Image (cartoon, rainbow, N blue to C red; front, side, top):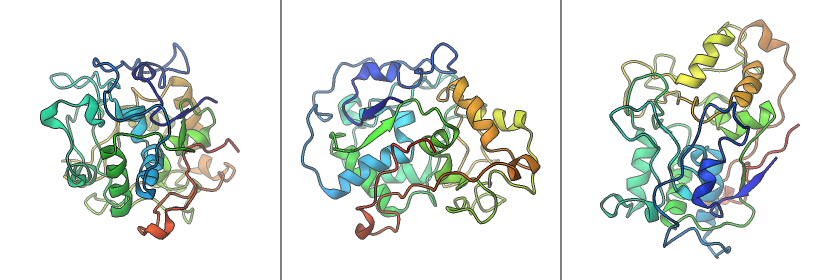
Length: 294
């Protein structure tokens, strides 16, 4: 599987990293209209703080890279957002309009924790709230990485086209919201979602539930917003323009509810996230970005 170093990706990679599976992909990403950035995103590794290193790893682990692209260049399609931007915005200041550039961490972490609902139309990619999923230290690290201009960080890479079900589940950050598959008691547990009726993100492979594969597929591709949609409430993003058809076909048999979920083998151990405890002492944890297939 092809692994790509974060911040080495050229803008043209945006047109390839989601469609690596070929013509059967659900998405056809576009490169941003601007050229190569004049600042940030250098071609050689630079010395950065531990916080920025953690931010680079977390940018991959929380699947920010899937929507906002390597190097934060944006340009990933959001074509169903009729009447609004039809691509996901860049995070790299070199690709943002001067009036919309980030100047401090609070500008980034506020949106990260609140989320942003562009549209309730099925299939539109909305920015989910990461409150309860990303802790304050992790959010600050991601913001530091963005403000640093997406420097190349040695050892931080992401798998542009994860092939196995367990790698897809981790690489697209399903595990950070839904927790480890395997039923009640699996670690990590689903993230809390106190503003939702259920107070937590749904557990997958839930033996007490029996969502059909067809319904699961629809939810993954079209997304789901708990009505009426509140600031700070975790929503299910629409992955239809981000997952390939092959990846969707792989993940569906891996996460079924009801009796089928009971019969599946246990997944590999969950990766450890940097700053998982919310303290700098945890920042030496290994990056989960490039997990191996079991």
